[in-house]
Image (cartoon, rainbow over all chains, first blue to last red; front, side, top):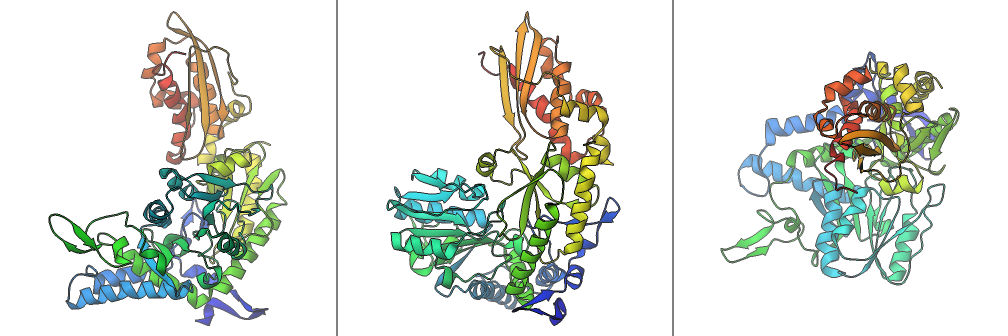
Length: 409
Length: 124
């Protein structure tokens, strides 16, 4: 297993990643795009999947496939066991002993479950505090309630100056910004929430793929993440919620699997977490998520965090050398860099470098309020993961230098 | 190769779009956002005897969407108001004189979607 880590390069407490070995596990990275090597720099949108994860799904369908929580025959027992063991695995992965792990279809659904299942019932008029750096998925669900909401601003470097009023009943923030790469100081925020008597939901969609998460240390009430941004297939997200809060959380989806007893007049709900998971779940994606966590843990989340930070820092330094570039967000960041080239729209940038096999995101990044905050309609964004190295960054820089040529600037 | 999209004429329209700006007291105006990419434009027209006499547009977007707006704004001048509904995407692509990749087609069609909604909007 150490083959994923370079044996001698023990820098402090971290082993540097053997990226060329890791790249080989990702079949899609062998593709050629327009005759060029495929350089994937859009992992903040969705990550690529290693062969181990792909095979885990294939194996499941070839050997164990059956519905979960229903039947007593061999394969059903196996699939139920694999499904439920993933729940335990996630609990360990998040260091979340006192939390319930609830499967959703994605991070957005997990946030919706908190908003419409818990907040609506328990703090129906309570004031909510969020920020301008949130993804639409942590803004729009709040508008489905009548609760007043306040959005904290960021400074020009994209950093949050967290302050909380006495009348705030709940705080809902992202851990890492999907546009700025800012890492919010969640430990401090959590303490302030606790002192203020406010509940705290943390959106971990951009942090969980790269950082060792300890919910025991962070001590938030609700934590959400998305499987597909961390090597798992699409279709599975997770809500980790403090166990004592599940009693007072309503389901938002009704049907089979979430019930105890049904008659033609009424029904009683199953215990947590099943009461929140109506219908047949996305079993294959949960199996895939299990395999993804195995893959990440084999390399080590702390090693991955150091690696992503190192590549992000390298990219930041190299991008600064490009003429007339504007980079958004702070120096201290993880995983991604958003930028604009002067007088060239981000779509044109992404379109042109696609010719050289480079995949980056362009547009508003599901963060229109943040675009407005920085007075732009769109940005280009390069994001990095454990399979990216300096070569990928250099390829990005070379291709960006050609963009001005196409525009004859 | 989709770099061919960035032909000299397209870049000219992007840098110096025709009919760009805001007009006072338009007879019709309509603004639309492409929710996928965030490109946003507003078209305004003045009409005399059912003929489009002047056109202005403004907004922000990529080279392809800007050029498409610019070219279309020229094309609809002196056109009968009722005819703008009948403009086909193929006609606009011919005017642009470029091959547009599938992913960028929405950049071309945004301008057309806007002007087709101009006269269904309430009279100002």
